[in-house]
Length: 209
Image 1 (tube, rainbow, N blue to C red):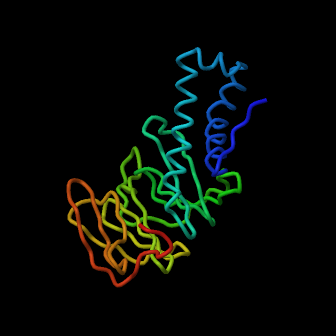
Image 2: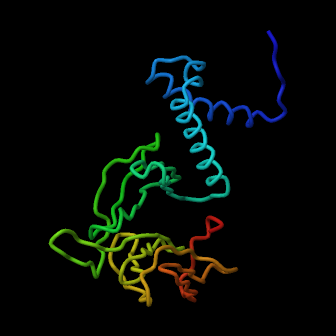
Image 3: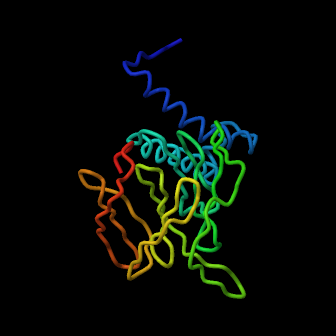
């Protein structure tokens, strides 16, 4: 039996993880061997996409530290959410419709449970067909306050979900991040505009962004 010595055990461990993520589910569901899966273009593509997903999430988490909750949505699979967290709960702004920022408890296996309304958006647009908040990107500061991009500006909530106020902007924001040497500058983008806001609050210090 041939064998190969590796100087870094983490490399083959991640290679095995990527392999399992791609092949285990596909071979089980299709009841096919690895060779049979690779011989069919459709199943081969499923395996490749699963491996790419694992690699993308692992790469994103490599530079993340401290307590975090991350949800990844691929444009190729918009109905699927891949989550990773260190600490709970995970907050999600679910789409642009609805009037609540919702929270989930993240289980050890990465699944989400106990969906609940965490905070109520101000200034929602009500029509006979829907309730629209324009909810989009989220950020947190060092005190645990949550900042949410909405149709009326950046709404700020306490760690308990109480609405604290709104930062008005000339155009609806889509995403934002605290940055700068002291993380007291909030950069905001949306609808073809970019904003730089000096803050008295400070961004979360447990990660780079």
